[in-house]
Length: 269
Image (cartoon, rainbow, N blue to C red; front, side, top):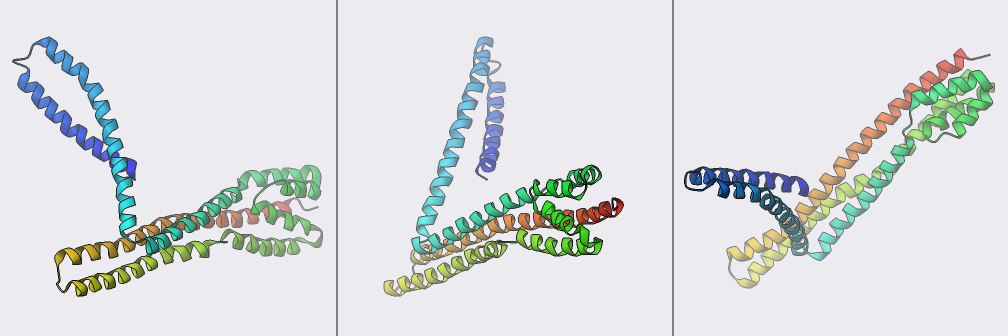
């Protein structure tokens, strides 16, 4: 986000600067010698590059300083709770993303290898292939192959049962992400309500409804809600991404298990 804001700021600044430079250059073309014009054109790229670098540095410093200042103004206790919710939620998000990336496999490639193993080495070679392959899909195939001697009906039951177990593992810790996603704005609202109560206490002590007292108290009170909402927005984006990733893996597993049963029927001896 900082880079995006910096990019738009720099583009606007460059557009405004280049327009002014072009206007000044046209105004002075008749009076200025040719060598002066060439010197200005030669110095412009260096000045522009330095200006861009300084502008980026100022924007990054100002954003960092603003966030730090607003965090302190919001109150250490409530803002710390909101920050803990954000950090804890991101920890579970990162864990789920790593797990789901490890669980994703090329099902088409695995099925091709499995069919080749069945043709060349039989069930034992296919089971060895599944043991050496990471991911829940290989585990589902292994459980089905392990019951091959009991008949295709037993294989199908094993695949369905173990597939349900693997699907439930994909959704592990999602409830914790949802918890911190909900706690962030709730703590922010709680901090806002308490801050407003404190603002009214200040008005009561002062004996006057001063705009300065009201505005200052309300600003500090609303900061916790702002940070709580940002926490919920960030976690919600990752939560939806994880859900879409899980749906993709589950759909792929269901299609792959159907193809797996077809391969077993085709290679049944």
